[in-house]
Length: 264
Image 1 (tube, one colour):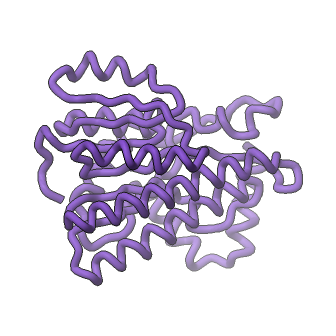
Image 2 (cartoon, one colour; image 1 turned 90 degrees about the vertical axis):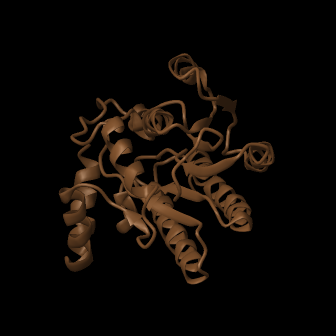
Image 3 (tube, rainbow, N blue to C red; image 1 turned 120 degrees about the horizontal axis):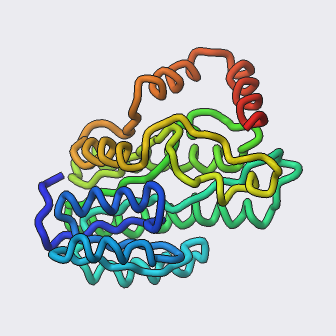
């Protein structure tokens, strides 16, 4: 992807905190103008004071309302958007028989349907210009089923499968557009605060992993440059885990996942 200049915009969903906010900070350091999208965008105001020479748009949209995805795209194409980061999403933790169906369906709307719509609309737009890139946040959870976190793991498997297929199509058609999957492992965010986990009496689990800032710095650097690869997977431990899933018996992988998730 060509080096950014000051008239280009990056659109980041789920931009108000966690990885989304960290991606916004990293993109600003690389001289991108930002369109930060979230249900509540007050946190982006401090970035506006830190980077007065760049344009930082803060747009309030609930993307689980799928009509908003189309409204967002229609508004965004009035800007010179060359990069979309689909980061918005959350998880619903717990045994499938116990989790709330409406929350799961809302999560599917956000993690899968909203991402699908925005990827579709922006890929078509980018292909017309033969320039642009989509970064979809999947997870190492995408590489195997996840007992006790079943719907979330399944949603990330969809993201990884869809993005890899689209990126293959683009490469085969000699397009310069790319759709790259970024697959984080454990990250020190407040991810668990929106899962059903908050309704238990347990304290949120202590996450041993990268900070959002370090992860976004390393993953964005790779995701903006890569042309042949479909997936960005950081960390020796994460790469070993994904490789091991391919060779260990599935019953063993599922058993270990069940025990780990149940004990959180």
